[in-house]
Length: 546
Image (cartoon, rainbow, N blue to C red; front, top):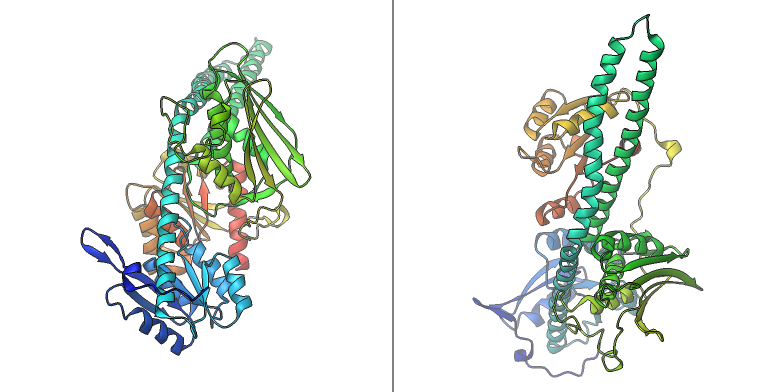
């Protein structure tokens, strides 16, 4: 950091709202007592501009930051309980739904400062030579950066919600079709079961062959209806799961994926919206796997498909081609159309914020801007390439090394997954049909207790808390999962660690922050029976090994 500035106090005056100046919240973490006192002395000369709080350890600072997110942090290169690099990782994980507050590293180790800046710190400073103006400028820049990050996050969410709105009609159609035949099949299944029971009751010695033939015919039809219904429900679960994954706006949702999977999800989510306007062809060649925020890349593909659709007139032959491939260590995804294209005088503007050629203004005008930014976050690129024969081609390129990482978690191998009939499992859910499904799947393997609300669950636990696992729905009308868990933490802390949350919906902000603050797993409905058994056995194995 340079130190040649001569800023006056007015240059970094605190932000203002309707009530007047808002002081900057500054958290100082670690460092020698003299360093912390020097920071306080230099910044508090400007009375009312800053609120300073000091923490000597990383653990204390993480607890303080969770309670009230600071505008910026001064973090020592060396901390007594964690390295500053580990502290930054924990700080990012503590509030994954919010931007990381800007961090300014101080200390005498330039290598340590450089490593922290690589991991997300904004700046470094030497307190031995820093002036009051240097500190004020660092805090002001940090606060401006935080405001910019929060604005960017809101713009991300606005574009995502706009895209979800455009997808809604097509997704509803995609869900209603399998739901229609699943319902019809299940209704017929109930009727066929009644007829089958009548046929079995009517078996006589006089016509056993005829009666058995009727039974076999009914069983064949029942099996066919069950297979079709399972396929329909699986389709619904897949579509809803993909839509939920896309709808999440949390950062740090990194996982292994590839551009073929990104393309498949985007095509599935958009096909009913665009199929009446043009044809969609796919040429998906294998691509390399990499770590990515898959939801962001799916949004890029959806934006490109949506833009290509808008370039169509609905004439015969209008088509979009979605293709993938590999060029060395770089995977690419191409969205190509034969529409009216982009005129040469507009090509330099298409990635600018709020620029659009859509006269109806159906979007936010940020689709291509954010799409290019999402590509760059993965060390990739998004480029426009005009087609000689007319139309447009956009190419998303992502390298094998995106610079992102996934949280390390040990998943037991299938050979390690085992269950014990002596394990007691408490299931808490307000849906009677869901409880019956749990009973059918789990009772052959476990001693299962079923209750339909949190109050009844607490009563059961009061008489005996000897449960090996508690599967608890999050959203319930009587004492929901969050409040139920908090009661367990107070009165049965050991059992609280054995809770698995289950949910079929998208969490509200408060519930999501609670889930992020616990280490308990969350299972998303629906779970196939074998997946449920494997997940529960894995959880119990981890509990035993802890």
